[in-house]
Amino acid sequence: MSDADRPDLSGPDADRLLSALFDRHAPSLHAYLARRLDTATADDLVAETFLIAWTARARYRPDEAPARAWLYGIATNLLRRHARSEVRGLRAYAREGGKAVDVATPEALAVSRADASNHVRAMAGGIADLRQEERDVLLLVAWAGLRPSEAAEALGITSVTCRTRLHRARRALRKYADLLEENHD
Image 1 (cartoon, rainbow, N blue to C red):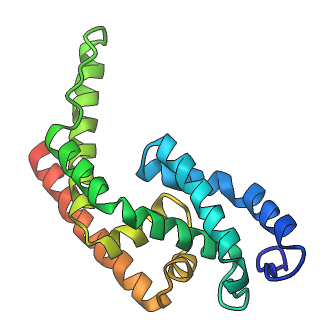
Image 2 (image 1 turned 120 degrees about the horizontal axis):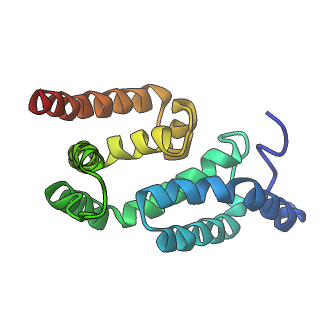
């Protein structure tokens, strides 16, 4: 990995290096956060992530994790503060998902949207039912595009633990997909 991936943020150049990290990683962090939360909250959490990174810059250890994983770890910890409302929202969507109807659409599109809505509702319920630790790993890999090893670094867990949590999350979500298939046939 290059020095840009593991910058020394404890030195006099920290402001420039952190600014470069912001330019490089803020868009992907925002995309990850916006998929889990609303855009406005994602904006706030990206800003808070970099504020915490600035405050904690002297404690960052480049030999322990690349900056990208460190930043995703901070962002994920901030997300945990929102976990209770996130789960409530997913459960509500699982109950109510896709009830808005566009009366101007053709019948085939309406049927397609209803079917997609059922899939989304079931998967939202499945994601909500995951343990927080499994949900964090799954969404870092699926939505943020981190490799399992990077997700492990971001969460401060071993690669084996990360892969185990990812396996459990995927297995649990297969249950929801199987139920959809049974109900669809």
